[in-house]
Length: 423
Length: 193
Image 1 (cartoon, rainbow over the protein chains, first blue to last red):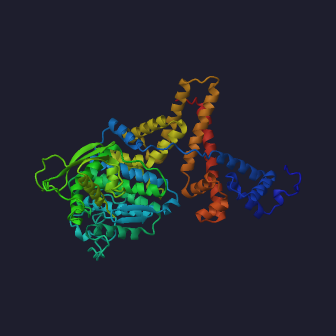
Image 2: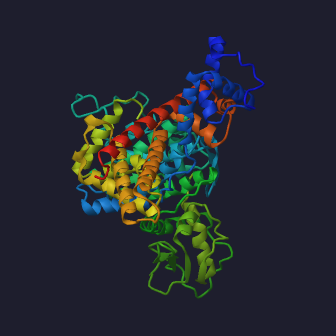
Image 3: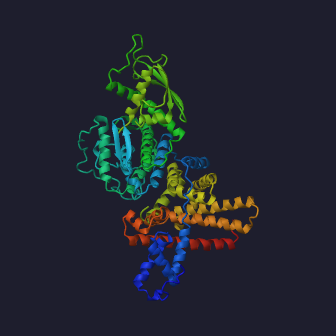
């Protein structure tokens, strides 16, 4: 093997330049151990006679030796909050993020960290996004497009530009140009710079009647338009746009916190502070959908953020119960006992786990009867499970729930929760 | 992030926002640079707790002293990288200094520190290689592919794949030589600051 059988007269100087260059171009691949055996053998023989190539080979091979396989330490999800808390304890923020913006900040950061690690093939995976009306199948970039489109409703409420092309401009007379100093549009850029001429067809195009009907139509149409607009973009650009908007949203909210500004999310009109928590929950749920599709782990929200999400879900629950009643005027299998109080029933909802708490939920709407009697039932479930159920990511008939009292009332709540989910 | 003249622009804006005390600017700084800071700290210190502590310190330093960053001397990323690297190595020296392992003379300990610091530096360099080069090297080396397989996978010519590997390693080799030269200097200057 040490060359005794080779022809020693084959010197590099006698090789054609072409041969020499061809072998030399293999040096990088060879240093990475990425040449097929025959090519590697040929190159190694060449190295014995060519000091110039041998010198480069040694340099590159040594460099390759420093490519280590060990991954960097996993960045624990809790580190972000830990570091920020540490910094803020040493120097309090003059312009803090309002507490209701924190879950959104944390969840968007977590999703972004997941996306940072996705390879080209993983961007092609298809995530399943169940809601109570079915299951959508979207690639990660399309999931981001959806999040961007719905977050865009908050952007409009905050006076930021709409990410969705050609919409709503005419509908929101109060929408002002971006109040922030964005890159490239400093205050000195001239009076007309920030103002865009609305396109001729600025009026909202009549939405085609979507299968979901009414309250999801406008938001679904926005999503569809944005997805179409972004279809040709590389996933990383879609990610960058989504991320930029999340940063702008939180920044606007921090610079001028107006938590009670109403935001029409289609399924409900929520004050901005609730809308932020709602978007945080949605971001978590769909982030987990993406993580599942690419088989990455995904951590649940921090306890204090989960707690805000649970509170929001509980606040929205009476509306969902009303929706359930509307679809089933007479709840099957729940015969009202002759003496039972009709209206004004309440249920004790006990949430355990890190977001523990206890709530009395009116089952028959806020106005129905005096609500001072004993709760008709109580149920215990985990806070994260509650949120997952509200996102229609759990089966209400299979969820582990501790229950006590009127079973039908508990079923009612369990079946109402998924109605809070949206396409 | 795309064009070179946008980077300092982002850097300077962020620096101004941090100086104003915008919490969101701190969050954005963290999101952009924590993987680098924590990764570098973790590679040098090889200890989860110590890496988290150092990450905390480095970000607290920027938050409390945004004026220390001078955009004229490079990007925020490179400044934070250097700061993290310096502090991690200091910490490693302290640890070795207070923890005399038997049979481990000063020379060996110092050598080890250098090896760890070099490895971390190289990893940092790998991480900051231009995306096509990094990607090509990663799918080839870490997944054990031939350059032909890599070319097919990435949809580039075999020629391009070979060039990227060679160029990427060339950049690493240059950094490696620089790092060694720097350590020589530090060694002569009596390293422990």
